[in-house]
Length: 83
Image (cartoon, rainbow, N blue to C red; front, side):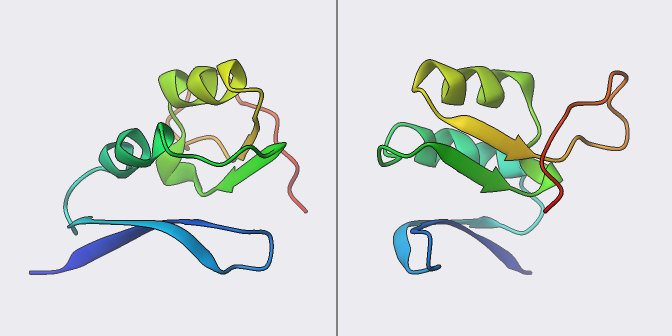
């Protein structure tokens, strides 16, 4: 059995919000749990496990620009800043 820690951090990496799920649970569960409590920011950086159209749209509605690499199985590539 393993676990996965989903974290919202500030720009220096200090944790603001944390959420723990079972290791086999999709990252979407963590994204949904933390989405409503995101701070007011310009950008959100996440790994490709959080690549979902609904999550990108929710971020954009909050005025947050997502920087999330697309899943390898995504049909149409999404643009993101690789730096």
